[in-house]
Image (spheres, helix red, strand yellow):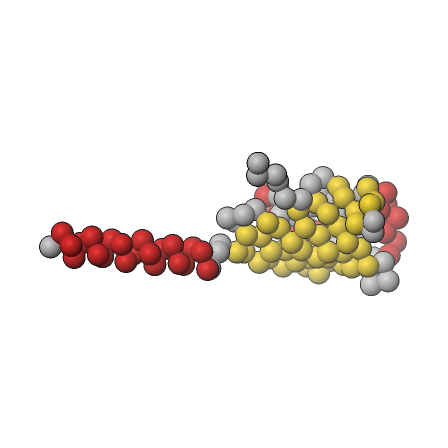
Length: 121
């Protein structure tokens, strides 16, 4: 009886390990506008950068709860480009601000972003 119980426990621990290893806890969110981002409190959760242009739209982000990895994208209107860029620090065509890295396609008015990983020393 003890061997059967032990076998069942080992089996379920193995299944749990495989499920958590190969199917991480990932969440994908889409927002129409900055207003929707604010309503959903995505900035407060840290999933969306604080410095989005007011005209940001077609906003999407994916975050993995286990590793705290966040990636996303948004579009913006050209009239907001100058003020948006003013709040960023540039290095080799990659911009940085408040814990996020940004890659900006100025022709398409499209921004891809990701959070800056924390050092795990």
